Length: 119
Length: 107
Image (cartoon, rainbow over all chains, first blue to last red):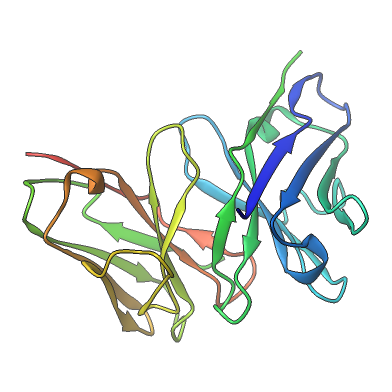
């Protein structure tokens, strides 16, 4: 079964750092474009970042320069390194696989990990 | 950023009804438009990609149409498990953006 499991969320103070992990099973993160999407409390879905094949990355303006997406082919895991966290980064963070040849639709999603940024 | 506007924001329907949900973009997306179903506490579930292509395993009562700026998701014969929120998402240009959703609840 193709599955993604996120971890690493938690309560952080503004200015802090956190690394989210997204472990894949049933497929390889290295063989797919992968993405992070977040949902702030009471808000809609917001795309955060994508890593393409090959290693081209893209970021929402709101996180550019603070977040970094990467993947480990041996651990078959996607990461989101988050720095200089702000209260507005508080959200449920999902990782997702992008369907190849789909025009960048997201077909496998994790259950999400919650990040709370508050003093 | 591309603005995605869904209508209606909510609707009430009965099992067996035909439901149509609209998604409009403020610029042309050609066919880079995807539809998702979302239930509370669950991750989104891909229904349609490329505006009209049914994702594998999705029931055929779901269909998508449109191109350019105007798109429609149709559920032909609403089932009990279809009561949920439906979201459109454009993948034509970065940053990808989502509509705010259409909540389908029971009449």
